Image (cartoon, rainbow, N blue to C red; front, side, top):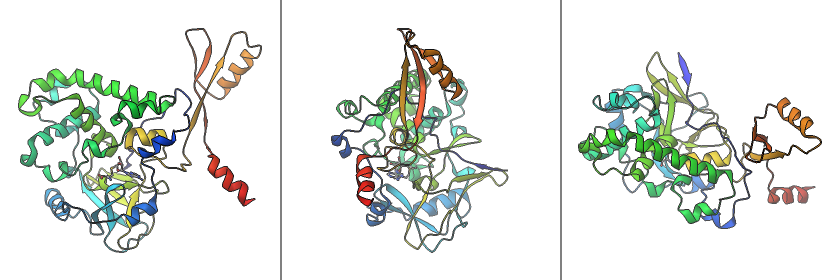
Length: 354
Ligand SMILES: C[S@@+](CC[C@H](N)C(=O)[O-])C[C@H]1O[C@@H](n2cnc3c(N)ncnc32)[C@H](O)[C@@H]1O
């Protein structure tokens, strides 16, 4: 049976309207542009030539004969080594060559209760492999994962940087995510402490890094979540329709090209149709013109509002959850989503064109 895989992005839930991002913030925001990616294609300092042969040896099978690893403005990336046509299978990674919570050491696995999620479990697998260094069977893969300084997810932003977006829902989501990771770390800490050979001195910061690695590059799979080496060097293109497919019968993950590519062109997939705040939180980048962008607007309906009941009925009709705040005000919690966000620049351009 074939299963299409989803990235680990969660349902985006705004708590407050997203304010316009400050100009100063643009130095930190990693705004995507595909043309930039093509221009900045250059050769890795550390050669990646031996990565695919290593993975193919581990998998006991060919992974790809049409892709090679290179660098673009988005970090490690995959490039076409020859012309690719739409519909071609561009890579196949057997389950045996993937990392999942199943890879937890058998002595650690039973100690982690159900309250520990799959992302945290896979993060622990990553921490163990990191600790083993060159002795790890996965060293060529683990050593190619981005370092904390190379990740721009908002959980890694400094306080003064986060303060720049303090009015936005992204700020709140970031604070909540950091607290959740900290809570998970505290819950698993006693287990980690029982294995000082792997986790002695492991810090929240290190766990947070491993957690973010999993969230930004693993796919939901029948094994919970899976890190799929090589496939996870594919960057996101907002117009791509290519996804990772799980073939349970053959125990393989595959990607098919959704369009043709010329030799040397960067090959992309989609991480899903996400608004910028979700992209920023989970992947550390955003798009200047993202047609999936959303803005949340919260509506407060005081009891003395003569149209209170009518407004509440309208909200119910549109299936918007209603909550009460501490003053008894009725709030539409998720409120409504504006799907099309036009910037002033866009409006000016449109106006000029008329
Ligand atoms: C699954 S990894 C892709 C491989 C990654 N470039 C690397 O160096 O390992 C996801 C990360 O790649 C980067 N990325 C992917 N698509 C991008 C895009 N369209 N614009 C900017 N960064 C992107 C982000 O840092 C994201 O968190």
